[in-house]
Length: 92
Image (cartoon, rainbow, N blue to C red; front, side, top):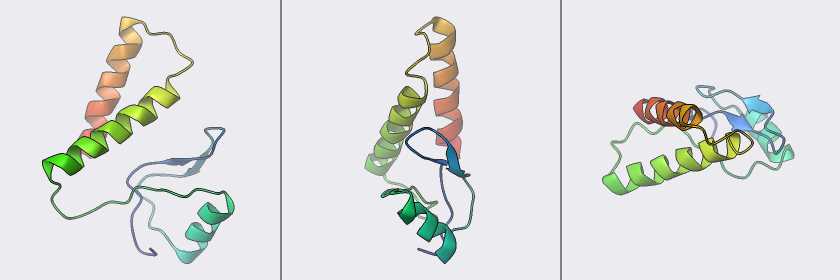
């Protein structure tokens, strides 16, 4: 919906950044997402999240991080970085 704020970066299938988190959506930006076949985005919700909603958000972030780190090693350093990024995203 125009006027909504993106909660997370929007990436295409090749992991190219299409839109940055924090962007206020416009009719034009929504049209771009549609042309790029982006069917789901996360928007900022000012309503307090229930524990169930927070768990869904956490799982979504974890899946996104797993996808982004899929080609990296599973070293302790990389797992720690993922943990830090997860905590950072959950604070937003």
